[in-house]
Image 1: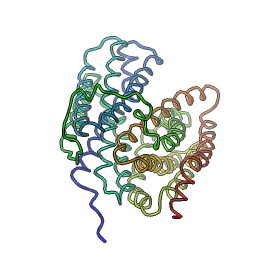
Image 2: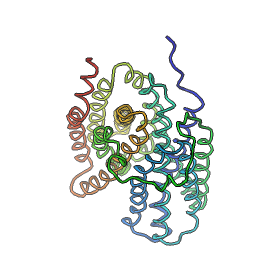
Image 3: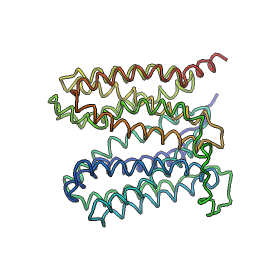
Image 4: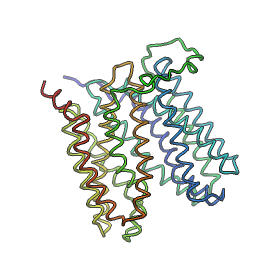
Length: 395
């Protein structure tokens, strides 16, 4: 039996748009704190607020974006959000105080939150139902690749050519995100676009959140707390154990093993269900963190990167796929918004907790505790989703 096509123009376009969006996000994630301290005269704590402000606005806007997508055309919301995202990128040239920069970061976060919700809803419509696990895996891989390319590109541009070129590059990347989003065509159930629908927002919890997505979103947030230890401190840890020369290759190895494993893990998800993929991925994630805690050589450091890449890189798209599958067809956009909002909250909370924890322990012990924490996640997943998944597979 022939498979339904996955690599269509629309799937490639929405994945490309998501890729450029996240390249811009990670591009600024690593450079804005440096810019705030060196050129705006801020402290490290104030520089950290630039990221916090961005994520807060993204989290706040997502439930409303989910409602707008239900009432208006998905592409209309996506293009509007990309215009906001690009416009905010242009504004970075002007502020000379941290207060003004915080306001721009807030606006930028609104565009990001709307766009990630819209692309998530659109890709759920574009991917054939029989290949959802495989398709979501490839789609989320565009985010993982951006996580490698964005920081590398941002730091390189800022160090070589300065902040002016950095902001120009951000505009170019944001423009590419907008252009690729214009190429997407999805089947829309509503064609009457009413501007007033944007202002008709419901504040009832059931309209702000898709409750069917909450259990797996909580699971994703639980694991993201451990993953934030990698995002925040793996490069610092590499310097401490004297393998700093290969620190920049951590996420490259992460991405390579993810690329190699993705054709298999996504297909197995569709064929055998989530549990067959999630449980081994949790063990690999935990084992990678434990190996990372014990490493003293560059080779072992990069092997740990590969294990974490397969583990966490498989868990995240699996969780997002589950969130979409659990929701009714008309609620998939809200399910995407709910999942990403709870997940981002986990990343933000994790960054705070991990930052506090490292003041009282070594990085080696931090990663040992994170490995144990991830194993506890086996039971969290079992209680929140794994048992129901097993029952479905038995029917």
